[in-house]
Image 1 (tube, rainbow over the protein chains, first blue to last red):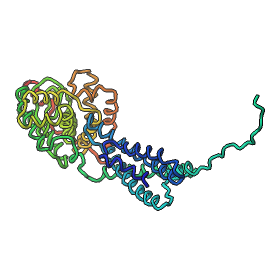
Image 2: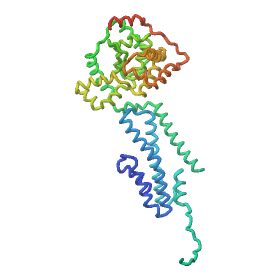
Image 3: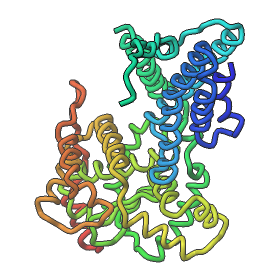
Image 4: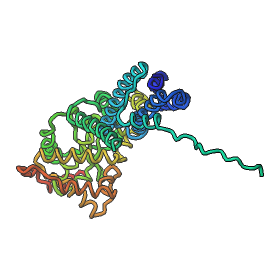
Amino acid sequence: MGAYLMMFAAVAIGLPLPIINLIAAVIYYFVNRKKSRFVHFHSLQALLSQIPTTLINWGLVVWAVWIAVTDLRLSEEFWSYAILAGVATLFYFIISMIAAYKARQGKMYYFLFFGKIAYDVAFRVREERATTEPVNKPPF
Amino acid sequence: MRLWRDLLILLAFAVAIFLGGYWLIKNVNWNLSERFEFGLSVEQEKKLGDLMKETLWNNFDKLEDPTVDSAMQIITARLLRKLDTSQYQYNFIVLAKDEINAFTIPGGNIYIFSGLLLESESPEEVAAVLAHEIGHAEKRHVVQKLVKEFSLGALVAILSGGDPSLLMDVLRQVIGTSFDRDQENEADDFALALLEKARIEPKSLAVFFERLNAKDLSYNRNLELIMTHPHNDKRLAKSRGYLTQKDFRAEKIAVDWARVKQAVRTKQ
């Protein structure tokens, strides 16, 4: 559940740059992934699914700063992109809250695309260590 | 395979939201540029224009002649009649200066140098240049350029009676520098559409600048952008190739242009 709430880290800090949430999610993932496959799955899903929204929001910040510094005109393309960023962030907030609730109940919840990747990584059957018969050899 | 399908679905959603947003922005009048523009209000712009006019008269002489005034009246009336809605009350003034230039100052004040009238072969060509300048005014390019160059704070300081020498710099900026490529394109689009609505041949814009190019005349930087930069070939081609409505019939502007030029020559 905590993994999904990492995205609000940026909001707590005041959204100066939409990268804080990603950093928080990465730290959370590496600290908790060994706890269980279930925690590994949810924290990885939370981390991966934040990447596109973070990149889109970053793009918006860079574009806005660029406009403020150079052009001073807010084009139709910029507003369309801002709508995309807004909708993507809102959508991500909603599905994150749902996923956090499900994780709290101990249930799986799969995001489109990212859910499958996270599942494959977390629940991959790891190869057992080689169990070849020990061979007694003389010490020379 | 399923993974790729999921990725495609996500991308399709993103593209659909972007295009949907673009459609909404294009087709619904949100007045976004009005609300969020980093600039002056229209009222402040008019006030700045009035202050600049005073400075202008210290540096230029108005060309006053009944023939020229009447011709300008006829040309501008043709354009303004077809300007559906406007934030400004336009003033068009001819300045007695042997330079090929026209410029717009804030508040809908458009100036044209007598040198440009002499180089024009028809009133339609002058109308095309003026339509282009109206485009800059309507799209608020002038005030955007000034905010960019001088900062909003400096302009507000001028409005509240600040440094008069700064006002001279602002005027110099308006007269002597060019707009950026996007703004020129926007003003072209506006001019071509306005010319068509006013039943003036839209190709006149290209005709005028192509002739100046061919003559290799020197001209002010304000007009230079239209004529010299390589990408402007595209702009001239756009004017040349502008497709009018099928029922479009150009109507000549009823002005004896040779007489107007003669009047300009005698007054200059």
